[in-house]
Structure formats: C-alpha cells, structure tokens
Amino acid sequence: MCGISGFYSRQRITKDTLTLMNDTMIHRGPDDSGVEIYEAPGGYTVGLAQRRLSILDLSPLGHQPMHSADGCISVVYNGEIYNYRELKEELSDYSFCSNCDTEVILAAYLKWGISCVEKFNGMFAICIYDRRSADLYLIRDRIGKKPLYYELEGENLIFASELKPIMARPGFSGKIRLELLPRYLFQQYINAPDSIFEHVYKLEPGSILKFKEGKSTVWKYWDVKTVYHKMQESPVTDYEQGKEELKALLNKAVASRMIADVPLGTFLSGGYDSSLTTAIAQKHSPEPVKTFSIGFNDERYNEAKYAREIAEYLGTDHTELYIGEKEMLDLVESIPEFYDEPFADSSQIPTMLVSKLAKSRVTVALSGDGGDEFFCGYNLYENVRKAQKLDTLGGMIHGICNLPVLRQSKVEERLPFKVRVIAGNRVKEAKTQFTSNNYMNLAEKMTLGEGKTCYYASESSYQVENWQIRRMLLDMDTYLPGDILCKVDRASMKYSLEARCPILDKDVMEYSFRLSHDLKYRNGIKKYILKEIAFDYIPKQMLERPKKGFSVPLDDWLHGPLKEQLLAVSDSAYLRRQGLFQPDFVKKLIENYLQTGDGGPSTGANYSRLIWSFFVFQQWYYGYCSNLS
Image (cartoon, rainbow, N blue to C red; front, side, top):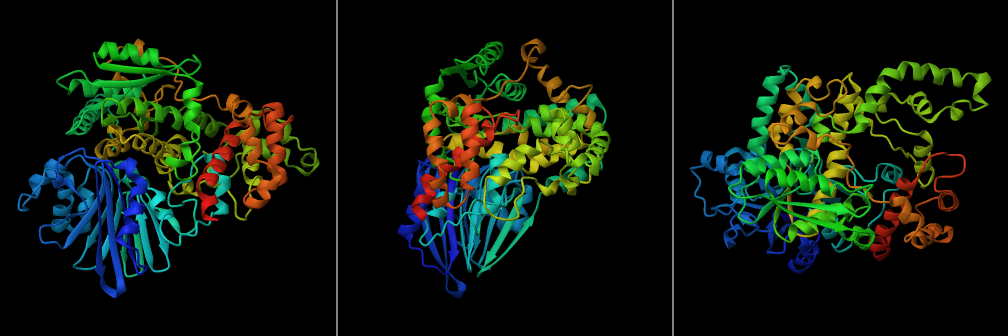
C-alpha cells in the first residue's frame, strides 16, 4: 500500500519539486520513498515517485520506482495483487530479485503487454513507463478500490493517488467546476471521471489511460454493465450450487488477503459482512484473529455489544473503544486534510476512529465492504422494488395533478410525502434515483452556474428491467467507488493502515453476477444467500437484528457546537466574495434550518444532510482553495 505520483511533461518539474509533491502523501507511505526523472522523446520528461507502506517483502528490494532487469520498463504502484504467487509461477522464465508483487507487474507486462492487467486480481493504481515506445500507462483496479487522479494541462500529464501532489505542482490553477456542486451537495461525493477541479479527473474503475507526447487515450478493460451481461449468459439458479460455489470463492478471497509480512486483523461491526469476513479469516488463521470495533456512548448508534458477542463466539483477539461526541468532533477539522476533495459522508468520522484503533496493533485490516451492493443489502433496494410496482399508478397521479384545472393549485405538492415522491418520479433516465424533488431542487438552487443536475444519466444504459438490479449496478458504478471505497481508503490511509475487501475480489464479484437475483433477494429478505453462508459460521440469532451503521448526530452538531462556524460560512457577504453559491438563497435556507430544524416551516423534511454537505465543502474550500486564489 502506497501513494504514487508523477508526470509526463514538457513543463520542467525538478526532482526537488516532485519530491515535495510526493511527500504531501507521506501518510500513505511512511516507510520509504523514491523519486526519479527520465528524459523522453519530443522534449518531454517523465517523473515517477512513490511513498511506500511496506506490506510484502519489507526489504529494500521492494523499493519503487522499480525497473525491469533490462531497464526498459519502470513502475510505481499502489495496492496489492493477491494472485501474485500464481502469476509468478506462470512467469518462471523471468529472473525475480524480490518477493513482492511489484516485480510481478513488471514481468507480466514484459510477457503480455498492457493486457497483463486482465490477469491481476487485486486492488491497484499502477503507472508503467515503457522506454521502448515512450508510452506511459495509468491503470486502476476493476471496482475502484485504489484512487488515481490525473491532470491534463496542455500537452502535459500529471498524476497522483490523491489531489494533494497535483495541487502542489507549480502553476496549478485550481478552478472549481461549478456545474458539479449541486450533485456533490445532493450525493455528498464527486464520482469519477469528474473531480472538483477543471482539467483534473479521476481515472474510472476498470480503466487504462495511455499517454505519449501530449496525446491521451482512455479505455475500459472491465466494466460493470458489460461483465454483468456476460456473466448472465451462464446463470446460476440452483440455491445449493450457488451457496457452495460462492462460499468457496469467499474463502479463497479471504485467505489470499491474509498474506502479509506485517500484523493483520479485521474490522468487526457486528453486521453480516464484517462478521462473515471475520469468521472466514478466523478459520484460516493459526491463532486468534485481531478484531476491532468502536462503540458509541449514545445507544441510538451503538453496535459494539453485538460485535463483542460475535468476537467471543468466534474466539478472536478483540479490541473495542467507546467514543463520545468530543472524539468525533475533534476529527471534523481534519476531514479536508485527508479527503482532499469535498466529501461529506459523515460515517467517515467513525471509520477514521476505528482505523486509528486498528493501527495501534496491525498494519492490514480486512473489511466487509461490497456486500450490500453486490448482494442487494440496502434498505433502499426494498424501496426501489416498491417504487417499480407503483410507477404506473404514480404516472397517473402525476398526470391528473398536472391537468390545467389542477396545475395552478399545486395539488401534487400537497400530497403525502411518499405519494409525492412516486408521482414525481418521471425522469425516464433515472427511475431508481427517486427522492424528494424539493430536496433536489434546493441543491440546484444553492449554487451558481448552468447545466446543473443531481442525477446520474448512466442508469438508462444498463438495459435491465428489474429496478433493484438496475440500482445495484448503478451503485457499483457510483456510490461504491465514489463514496464507500473512497471513505475507507482515506480513513485507513490517514493512519497508514491498509484496508482489504474480500467481497470485492474479482472472482466473487463476477460470480455474483451469475447468481439469479432471487438468490440475493428472496421473500423480502435482502442479501439472502450471503446471510445463509454467514449462518454456517455464526448462529442466526446473533446476526438477525436491525442495522444501525456508522451514524453521527449531524442535526445536533449543526444546531450546537458547529452552529457559529456554519453561520460564518453562509454569510451572504462571504458567499458573494466566494462566487460559488447563491448568497441570499443559501443564507435564508440555513437561517430557516437553524430556526426550525429543517429546510423551512412548510417543507416537513429534515435537511441536515444537505447542510452538512455545504458545511464540509466550505471547510475544504478554506483549507485548500483560499491558498490558490
């Protein structure tokens, strides 16, 4: 696990400058660093840099940039190739010097070219520079576990694991993309390929970028939609077959992620996914697995007691820490430092705290991420199923309410909230993204700029009639990499902790696409087959309970200890100087929120999530953009 950065540029970036850029990510790799610059054709230079967190082969032989034996290929790399041992056997004609997976990437590229990435099973962000052709490749793993940003500025390419090195390069403009702000306020994150800045992008999951002498090409080697339809050509409909084969794949995925030359443990929340991951890890470990959970003094959010019961049942070496409001609030100011793009999923705070706890004893932690998206686990998916059944009726209600005789009376706005949402869900390209139109309109009205929208248009491309499946595919393309995996990556790397996700193993993901949907959602039971596998390891009564998740009391914070800060950043004079938000509208919205606890006396809905997104953006802006302007 590391952080990488570099460039392919005619702009002269010195080794000292690249070192400064690279060292902005020292938290991602405190154990070692490497910075090198090479001459390239056409007046270009190539710079490669890495900060290393040593996980495999802790010796200097794992140092990066790493070069092939003949010196023609160089690589910097962040992540883990879990099947590197198997690949090493296929590459036996290469003279390996180390026992790390980085060298396997070099050997694989020499043998198979850029198509070698199709053989990698892991999480990775890779840069390969080929001196023979002067081609530079950027590669991101299939589901986007590891981040990779790049800037195309004129004929120059700058890249990094985080935005910090790019922002630190000489001459960086930092112009904010106004049209993305409504979607950020609504979704709480910015999804690939976009970034908050003009000319700066995230390489999309499953993608390769090729750059040479000012010209770039991007293509997909793995795509959620394409792979889903391909796997559906050989469906698995039999429950026993599905359970047996999925269970075997999960065991293999967990076992491969337990290979490390440093201490390893698991996050254990007490939910199905983390409990199943921990149970399998315990099965494959010769000693008690180290497990970590945090508890909240507020019982509304506390799941630590359930995690402790499961840890005791499995016989793990369990560590838990109870935290209060002060510990969480203390981390609020550090959000922009480690999430160096606006990011407002408030569960980032407890995720940082459990990562800090785990780092006190281990360097690698397994997590249960991915189970909800791939196996139909979110409550939202139940709502989506109901919405599809009621869609025709909703269309009829919408049509009646918009008859000329009724439209002026705004009858639709006076319908009960749930009826209003179904009736208003008329955007054909976004049928599974229904919400309160008022909430979405507020996000759009808060900002300046044209062409504003909160929807993802990609939903219409999935060509799936079942809305549950369609929404799951959309979440795999957006929410999972853009929010969940980003949250875990930044929270864990803040403390130089590597997080590994067995459920997001390539073979597990692809097999899940083969499973008949009724093996995932059966008789109202979400994540059915995954739960049945979990019951083979842990008694059913210990797992069957309502899910609480990592929640924080946003409403209490924004009306209490953060109120003065919120008022300061929503002051209309400040907003006019900033030039991003509608000053009078935002000021009034937040005044109403603070007075009534919601978006205004007539809305009947709580807007703490939207206000929190705005507050986090302003924290980020103050931390970064005030220095750029």
